[in-house]
Image (cartoon, rainbow, N blue to C red; front, side, top):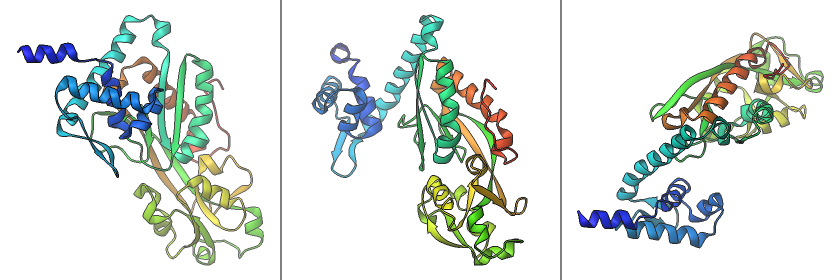
Length: 316
């Protein structure tokens, strides 16, 4: 019993903050950057925590960085629970002005994040200046378990995990081309005419979700002469008038330079899912942003489904 009391008295609770950042980033240098300190401070704090607990929390690898040991994995769950409890405690004991402040990080797919979420969030931070928001529009999976984001908007619903999840919306993709492309290539009157046209599409074996691999199923024998892991790169390439591209309506419909090809015949419907960790969902700033995104997404159903070219905002 005395040993446990000695260990507890020697524990610096602030060291858990350093432990969490290293566990999530796997790099002391990355953790240092996120915490605003230098590398040696992070290393010293981790050593201090390991000394207080009398156990090794990380194994260092040249290829994988800081990897949690079995004991480190056990501590991670407790440390995250402590972190969440502190967030909740601060909101419960603070006034409403303090509660509606803080920082939120939102991760989402590249196209939706860049062309829909970012414009909407610029209005959100105007309405709630005490809340700062990081937007991460990335063409790859974003991990909540590593706390890369507080809220994620993704193409697929998470299969498991301590998450609160909702279907955010349906959205539609259509086939687009520039007028210049259509003027200088064979006419497209029916789907079979597409066989002789070049496409711009995804790199199949590098796509981060199977939901993106729709070209071959929609248009058999389609030839993609230019491929990219980025939907924004595909959009930019399509604007050069050298090929056809299947693009989300929320992206392409806002650009008058792109024209829908075979509307009603070539189109796909997909979904976006929004989720966050259960322990964060009750935080007021998370709830506020969560509800805001749901509201503006619902208001923009015509844009998302390709029935409008105009984006609406909460104050409209």
